[in-house]
Structure formats: C-alpha cells, structure tokens
Image (cartoon, rainbow, N blue to C red; front, side, top):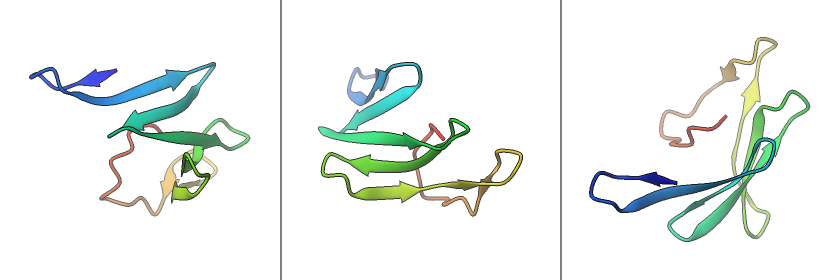
Length: 73
C-alpha cells in the first residue's frame, strides 16, 4: 500500500508473481502483461483499456505519455 505522510491511502497493489492489479480512488485497475512481462495495458473493472504501452526491442517505452502517473510499466 502506498500512503502519503498524513496517512491517506493513495494506491494499493495486488501481487501474484507480478503485479496483478492496483486500487486507486476505490477503482481497481488490472495490469495486462506482454510476453516479456512488461505492462502493455491497464484496464478497469469493466475491461475497458484506460492506458496502453508499447516498448522497443530494449524494453524502453515508446511514446510515453507525460501525464500518465502509472509507475508500474
């Protein structure tokens, strides 16, 4: 769980072998991984893609969105 100094919960992460999901503002988001284990999509509880990520051959994200606050990629 990620907290601020004042104790307010920011995010909570659910893990298996890798990160499976995160909860932020009472909404659960699921991490979809590619064959290399990189996060390729972030989907909400309804299965709607909220963010997608592409990587080059070296695992560097292509065209990163500067406003995306997802720290797990």
